[in-house]
Length: 426
Image (cartoon, rainbow, N blue to C red; front, side, top):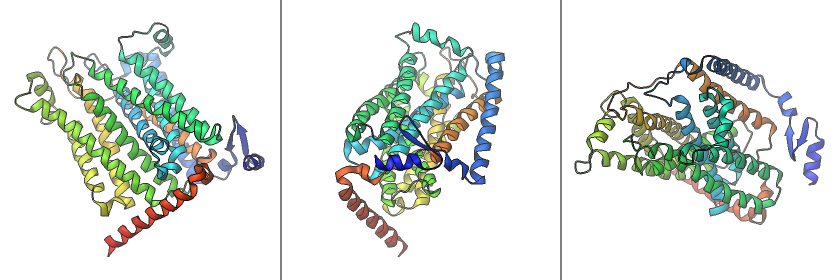
C-alpha cells in the first residue's frame, strides 16, 4: 500500500480505477516511439476513411459477393479470436498447473488477449452496413444460429480479460481472485473457440466444413498461434527493456509451442487422410479438397504444412530450442501459417457452392484491406501506449510465499539452458 501511495505522488502518474497510469513516460518517449505512433495513427485514419466509404456505399465497395458472403473480416475474426487463446492458456497454466515460470507473462498475456478479441469484434462491426441495427440481434436472437453464441461469448470474454487485467494490476482479492478469474476465463475461451468452429461445422450444405474435426482443429491452431504471438511479444518487450524475462521461460514456452504445433498439424493431416482415403472418400469432398492441393487454392493450404512443419522442425531438437533466433523464427512462421489456415478454412466452404458451381479465389478489395489494417493499427496502438503507461511488470512479491522456491527453480532452469547452449557451441 505504501508503495502504491509513493508511486501515485510521482510526477506524471495518475491513478484511475485503482491503476497508476504513468503518463509522464509519454513525455520522455523517444522520437522513434512517436514516429511509430504517428504511423499507426495514419493507418488508423485511413481505416476510418474506408469505414465512412463503406457506410456511404454499402457492400458495393467490398469484394464479397453471393459466392463469398464472408470475406477478410471473417478471416480476421477467426484469426484474432484464436490468437487470444494462446496467451490465456499460458496465463492459466500458472494458476491451474503451477507453471510459475510463466508468472512474469501474466499481465502481458491477459492484455494481449483482451485487445485481440476487441479487434475481432471490430471486424464484425465493419461488416455491418448498418451497425446500429445490431441491437435487434440482441433483442430477437435466433437460438439456432451459432453466431449468437460465438458473438456473445466474444463480448463476455473480452470483458473478462480486461477485468482480469485490472485484478492482476491492482491486486484486488489477491491470489484467490486471480485464481477464480482463471477458472472463469479458461472454460470461456474454450467455449468461444468451440462456437466459432460451430459457425462452420454446423453447415451441412458446405461439405468440407461439415466435419467434427473442425472444432479440435480450431482449438489447437488457436492455442499454437497464440503462444507463438505471445513469445514474439515477450521478446519485443524484453528488447525494449519494458519487461524482463528469463531464458528458461522462453525455453519452456518454446517446448509448449512445439507440442501444440505437432498436435495441430496431426489433426489437419487426419482430416486430409479421411477425405482422400479410398475407402472413406466421397466425390464431393475429394473434388473440393483437390482445389487446395493441385488447384487454384494451393497458395492457401500448402504454406500451412510447409511453414507449420518447418517451424516444428526448428523447435523439435533440444539443442536449437533454446536459441532466441530459432524461437522467434519458428513463432513467426507459425503465426503466418495459421493465417493461411484461416483463409483456407473460409474458402473451403465457398470454393464450390452447394449447387456445384466453382468460385475463383477471393481477393479483398482496397476498402476491406484498409478496414483490416485500421483495426490492426488500433490494436497495436493500444498495446504501444499500454507498454508505456501501464504497470505490466509483475512484482516479485506477487508470487507470495513460493517466491524463493520459484526463484531457485528458475535459476536451475537457466543454468540448464546455458549448459545446453555451451555444449552445442563446443
